[in-house]
Image (cartoon, rainbow, N blue to C red; front, side, top):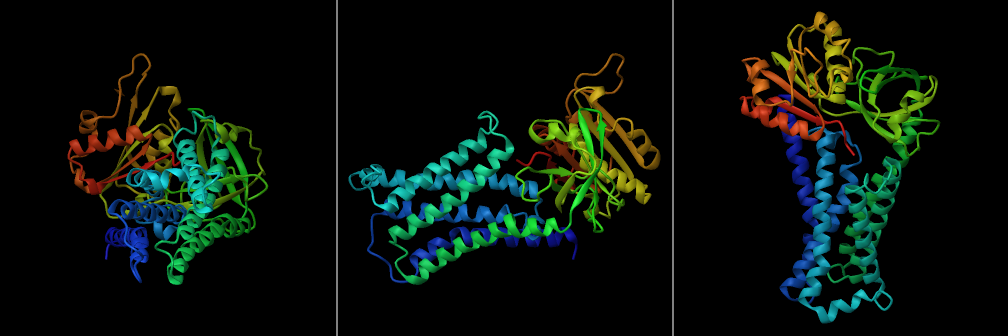
Length: 444
């Protein structure tokens, strides 16, 4: 059985389980002795509320960085799904009280007076306000001036409070949760969230603390980038696949809030240390160049399925990178060079200008070690520039891609608009969808 087929089966299983768990509350509600029937719209609003609440609870599981769950899709896909499905859950929960107001305003509108409302209604309004705060702070984090660290703390605390309040509301109303086993199942769902949160916030950091790293070197690169190299302290380090990434915590405590995901940029064949090339882009990244060698660090990883090692049988590979999206591809190319790989490789590398091309000086060396051809694409080329200019599009790809496009793997990494444009262009020049892998280098 091929790895691709196994991935498809496992991915199908997790999707089915998610749908089952998200709709499970309806089964919990309607099994057993049914309560007194109410109007269609009241029951419909309750159903939306149950599904939305279950979806909120499941977000704790899918974002826990569990490799068995992330593996079939890639963690960047999981996080994109989390962002979008959380909006859906929010809309379902918001629809719950709105439908109640419209269906029976005389009964439900007075509950807006929280000073006179029962506790179950107060918990509902508090949970809804918390959801609004999460959505607003997540979508407009930068406009609100929230640092990543502050947003992360706020996001985590609010999520736990919201779930507790929403469960309290559902149990307080008790219309479909009057029986003990129904209440027990909802409490078990809350218990699962507690277990997952304990694992993510306490157990995993404890395990990471037993395998510390330290900063070995910080090297400046072109394009306002730095390569941060870490070496294991008291253990053998980790093995990763080229193209994967890890969350890095730099500082004396593994429980620090300042934890960020970065792709490995060094060769996977190197075992003495690992490296991450990071672009200055605000918050933590602007401090990279000032980190002193010897500083303690911790790694959560490796993560990700964006790697050529999952496609060992392809004739060759095409890499389409935008800016610092080159880092996982540099890990792949450096690893392949260390392995003596002689399959044909094509790198199409888009940047603003020639001076900002990270790894510009090393790429010719890799071309000597590999069967590699590099095509630079510049938006602001220098005088006398003879190479490609503008944006990556179908005509540009058609000029450079190999003829046997269905036999090469195509990797895309960079800003989201570039990934979308490259996907469309590859489809236009006849590259099969199953031969395209992509990863956003910004997860949050």
